[in-house]
Amino acid sequence: MERKEGVSPELDALSCNLMGQVFDLLADGKEVPVLLAVQDPQGHMVSYQFSDDGIEACIEGAHTCVQNLKRSKGDKRAGIGVPQRYALVYEGAVADDKGAYQDAILLEFGEVGYHTYSAYSLYKGRGDAFQWTDPAPAGELDDLL
Image (cartoon, rainbow, N blue to C red; front, side, top):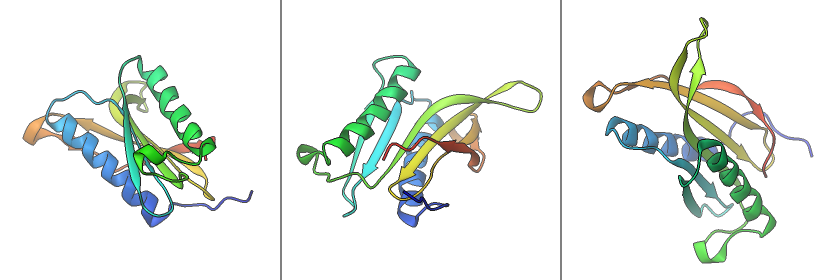
């Protein structure tokens, strides 16, 4: 299947809203679980959080959740049809030019018919001193949808 470059307005909004939720948690000094938001073609959205295991297992759990929703054509109990797009956000670190690691929020996002991408945003501080950078591209990922 030929995939489009770029990001649809709907996926951009989904991703930005999820990142905003994570920035609010960080500014308040709260723990950030691995967060996943999935939306169907009609705009119905469901979100999940993964926090009962290590970060890698939680990320893998989120990936599996997206694949399972695709395979099962949605989740009627959660009120969502076949997944059209998703955004996944979690805490991590990114190496700078000198090899030092800086705290970052990592974002994975994908949509049917588009390439799947990742991005990151550096952050520091808490409360009124909380600061973050605009998201920067981190590369293309394997498609989950």
